[in-house]
Length: 399
Image 1 (cartoon, rainbow, N blue to C red):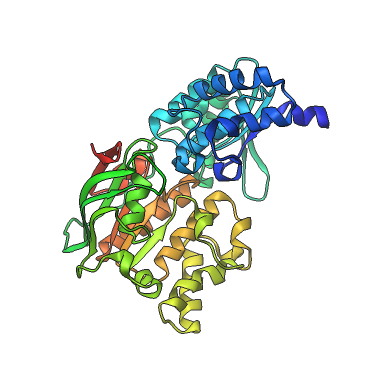
Image 2 (tube, rainbow, N blue to C red):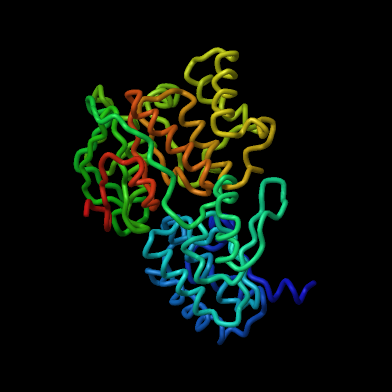
């Protein structure tokens, strides 16, 4: 068993759970040091692993300054440096921009004799890497097992019913109304620099989000998408510039009970926003904080659990859910206070085809009902299906 563990590398779904050191190079070296690799051999292997995943920064880059996608690349580098014979990867490209995802797939394709086991919702882009596809349904039963072409030819319709992302077009986009109202949020020349950072995470961006509108924020990893979302949501105060809601109030200045009634936020990492010990209680936190009575808060919670297929998990601890279930729960918490504006960071992460379509429909209905959504995403299908307008960032600026 000890030899098997030494020969096996694993990349988790959430890179936050895998990074342990303050600097990127030290994080990759950490595993090598624990495996007693000779000192002289450690840093050449660190440099090679970082180059393999096209890590874009020097080895002394603070890990806390990395975007979610950059952290994922660093986690993969840390495992590759160990040179395992078996590599297990749980949705390794889910947090990456399209260019970064393709670079990682190229890296995996170049690993030669190494055995790969990929856990994926979006399997289509990874098909050139795999010789065998195993489809597992809820409850653990095996639905299909075989060569990719055979599996999708024989079981394609059945797999689509189960929510598997089979080759072909994405789910049909919901029909949207096109009339927009007044600005629900506006940002003028906003810039932000994290404490201790030498560079600006955001360097002067203007935007407006109108009632009825879905605004997509796109761009490569590290371009400032998550920072922009947090600024509009009132969870960061701009270093320069101004963010205002429809009545001119800066969202960062509002107390929590008033902010949750105005803006619903979904973080890139859903675990960062859970505060209760049960799923149903998590959904009641916002309404109770906003002044709703307990029976009303419970009714809201149970309705959202049903709409997002989480009813069977009502008594579960939010931290025990899968990544996709946590994402749906985080979207539900944002909707629980019925805020006019939703700010979402990668809202479709970890979703199968069925829950993806339902999430898109839910967000479309929110906008069509007079609300608005600003969402940061790498998901090109989501942009096509939902966005009325797109703001692309690069290097902290509008591209």
